[in-house]
Amino acid sequence: MTEKDYDAAAEWAEHEMRLPAGSRSSLRGEAAAAFGRELVERSQGGRPSIDPEAGPGEKSPVRQVRLPRALNADLDAFAKSHHRKPSDVLREALSEYLATHKNAS
Image 1: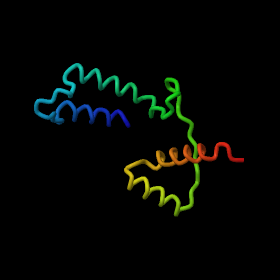
Image 2: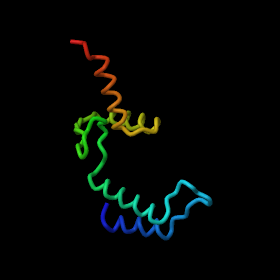
Image 3: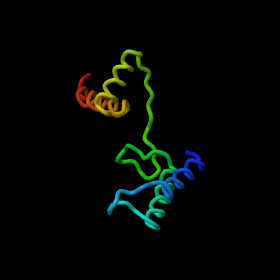
């Protein structure tokens, strides 16, 4: 996101966004501004790590894999039909495969 994107989001939140009547969970005023500033500051480091053992600022390792078109299409269709991301499906499948084949030689 760019500075222009952040400014547009702030403008919308401050002038156009409408809160549900009687909402008690929505932040307002200085509390909302403080939360927004903290959120923007936290987002400057990129995506949060998916590794529960990662330290602050530590990024998750990235692996790339090439797939045949048919397998890629199957993965996309499966992920979409289960309301999941393909990367989540791949992580779960790899985890299950390694657990199943851990002691196989």
